[in-house]
Image (cartoon, rainbow, N blue to C red; front, top):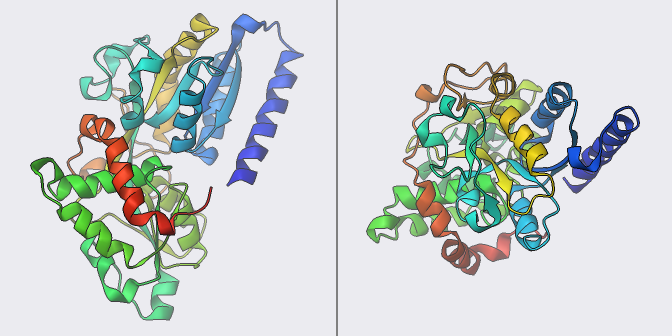
Amino acid sequence: MKTKRLTLMLILVVFSILFVFNSGWTAANEVVVYTALEEDESADYFELAAKELPDLNIKWIRYSTGELMAKVLAEKNNPQADVIYGTAVTELARVKDILEPYKPKDIDKIGKEYKDPDGYWTAIDMYVAAFCVNTKRLSEKNLTMPTSWADLTRPEYKGEIIMPNPASSGTGYLQVTSLLLMGGIKEGKEDGWEYLKKLDNNIVEYTNSGSAPAKLASTGEIAIGISFGYRVARQKSEGYPVEMVFPAEGAGYELEANALLKGTKNPEAAKMFLDWAISENAMKAYSKYKIMVTREGITSQATLPLPKPEEVKLAKMDFDWSAMNKTQLMEKWNALFVAKTEPK
């Protein structure tokens, strides 16, 4: 994953240099964008932004959700980026002290449930937790197809499941919080934690990224990768023997959102980018990859085998609760499950 990120960053640096020598850009036109969007989809967004914002010198750097948030928090006294683009709302909601409120142009086209009322963040899309199941490995191991979270605790799956680490992966965190919420944690119940302990018996490793479990399941290293819909659909479209399963109890989901960092060196250029990021053309680009986008009147146009939102039973999420309680939840998570966490 680090090699891929380095390759992407090198390509984007070369891309930026070429445009600098062929344009009239100045330092005031530069926008540094940190993103957690997937590499293969975001390449299309980069190309569109360069075309539609020719006066901006946009520098893109991609991190996993956990890495991105650690980076901006470490840099809060001397920000190195201007914009956060496409990362989990639950992360942005807990770091409002490093964000500058801004309501982009066309904000009225975004439903009220998809934007912070004070302008700290604006969501662009939804992604949904899903299992990536390798049907070939199931057959070879004489295993049945799982259809629910409950199924994953069956002894037959011991050593056949990989899941993202919620401390470093936004996908992992939405999965864990959805299970805790379904288990009644807000009512003082421990059912969610007890389930996670049972699931841990079958887990091989907790990976640092949300896409890694799907990729590992695709190549047959394990039978089941707990991941998210887009990545499973991408692996299936590339010919891997996998099926996408949304857990019957309810699939957790997250919103990906944008925000303006406090202390940005180029606020006007950053705001131009944020305006573009919820524009009709940008949303149409997202809709080719997403189960849902947040701008009114634009539906998913995904060419990948993704279902419509109404075809998936979604877990009841509480983003504010997830944001406010992350520190204590991750302290407990690490105390219970750190032994199987992938080294960074």
